[in-house]
Length: 155
Image 1 (tube, rainbow, N blue to C red):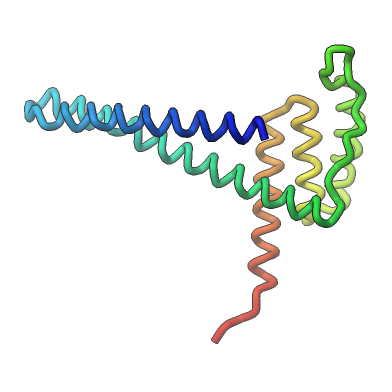
Image 2 (tube, rainbow, N blue to C red; image 1 turned 120 degrees about the horizontal axis):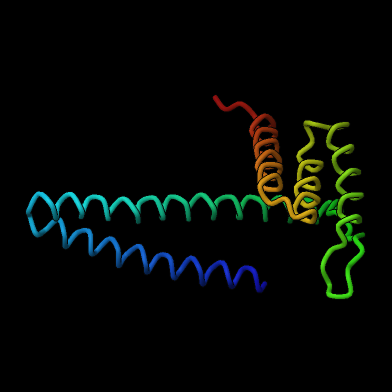
């Protein structure tokens, strides 16, 4: 729950920032000189990129949470079997061992979104965020592809 609150607060702050920056860009364009119009257009690009990035991240998080909920309903969420340091951090060797098992599971069933989801969690536990994100994107793509293939044909 704490992560959701942090995400929504950060998103709200970013939206306020985008509005402020966008209004400054519009003000510069309204000045009407070549220089201020150029700067105004350049300033307006930043909120557009920011809104796009925020939207894509929100879609990613929503889809990943949907997969987690579905996997939990099936009883297939990965069990936390990791050793922890006295400070509460995940032991690296333990994360590597679980990762090896998840990778082997995914290699045996490369078209199963559940395996890719569990691999993404293992990557995250091993502190490899870029690969965790790519594995989760693969899980999402497989899940959505399978869902589309299962829909009946409508006339």
